[in-house]
Image 1 (cartoon, rainbow, N blue to C red):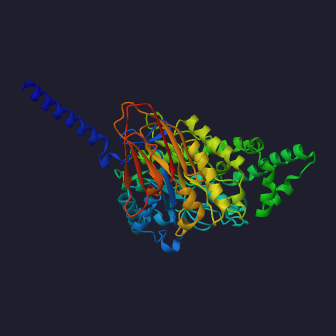
Image 2 (tube, rainbow, N blue to C red; image 1 turned 60 degrees about the vertical axis):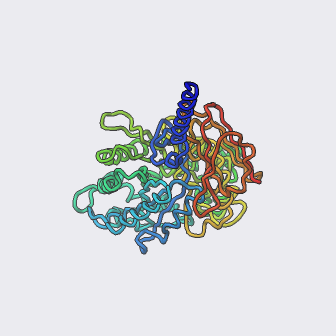
Image 3 (cartoon, one colour; image 1 turned 45 degrees about the vertical axis):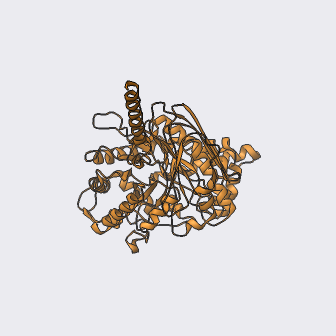
Length: 526
């Protein structure tokens, strides 16, 4: 009788223990992250798992539609089924603050709606105060009342971004922004920008879908940039002279650069990793002066304003515009009021080859891309912050070359375990080759431990990921897989489960902890 009672008690105890384990590891609420924070150089969720944020930019720059497109709840559901888990959602200052100190509630409610759609689709959002050429007068960003260009002329180049380098109006507007020049009522233009962030911080405090704020898109130094190009082309002339033994005039190189065909020809000489590193390294000192004396204090001012309201949101810092193509940033994380480092800072680097926005983009040099990603990685280690590649790609067309370029970028992103948001989503892009066969790919979402390697080969259909599992973990590691029924799971010998994504052929592979440190997932398409 005693043995029977002991058996019953033992059975009940085992059942209770199993139910506890299942309650920890298998319930849907523990499957996907519900909150994002930072630990060292990693994004982490509420259970301490490493999170790989994989997403897309959604930015509308058109004032005629109020800076909000026709995307709806279906768009955000599609983002989820394509494997995205985060959206870099653009906010245009001109749409937000139509007059000094007056904020557009209609615009804000439309942003609220997009955030709710993201939440319903289990997506995170980080808000991006977006600008190109500073102002709505020249492209998008600041309202006209905040554009202090001194009446200077505006010039356009063959590539839209050339205006940064040739437009006195754009440069003067940035100069006055960094100087915090007062607008008509005596308040500094930069102070208005900071206050706009404060309004957003107050609105989204406590909203876990909004994980943080990208404080400024691609900050540009202003008129001081006029000194950058002679240095850059001087370094390039030296490289050419070493290669050919002939002197090359800087003026001729600048003229060559002004056309997209000339730019392509010039860059053919810079497909070597070491040469390209030497070239962009020539601009480090000039760029670092801007970042240290203007950009860093500005970021600290915005951070102080946001932290006076919200101490939990992540703050994403974007390097100088010139760092997009490989110059190493000199930025540092901001500090809290007590002078200790703010532990919730992420480096939102942008990565673009110098052929971006030209007809030769698909011929971008992989050697140049390697330099850019290496320098981003180096900077993240120096600052001890995680990286999200806030923008990369800007791909167009349906060629195999664009797909190959997408895969090259993603190869470096996976190598360093970076998070990323592709630039950019627009209706119909999902039908293009690079989107369907490169961007939509298997990948880890949350890892209960430390990633060791992560690789997907689209040619062979093989996906391999290795990680060291946290030995005390009771939470699963989760992978996103497109076309869930086309994968062969025969090689997976440990406990796992498939979670389908509603109304799609995609899903999540949920791998439960085993208590063994070294883990490897190797699966292939059927």
